[in-house]
Image (cartoon, rainbow, N blue to C red; front, side, top):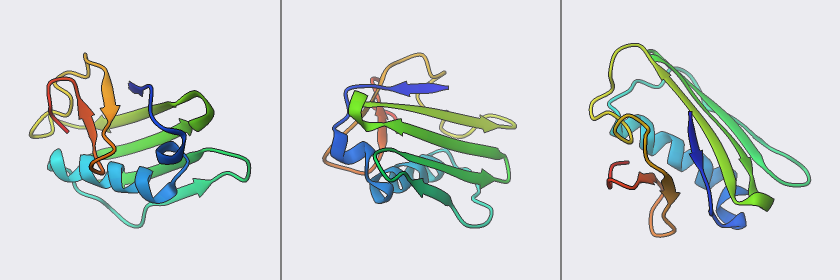
Length: 107
């Protein structure tokens, strides 16, 4: 589980931005997407999404009004490179790109 804080409301309320970040994490981790992404933009605010992976799945739930997102990434084996080291650091959503970035600079 990766918790992301202090993200702009606009980024966390954008299905396109959240999906782009999820796909960037899949690519950076050398993971394999299976099927189509499932994304839901909620009427008032927030986005949820899930990507089915041959290695397992990644899901994201956002609370834009709090600048917060929760990300679950489950894999069998170790992705290469391991995302966010062992998920020990705090992640930030950089406005200049479409990827979740960790304190150590990894995607």
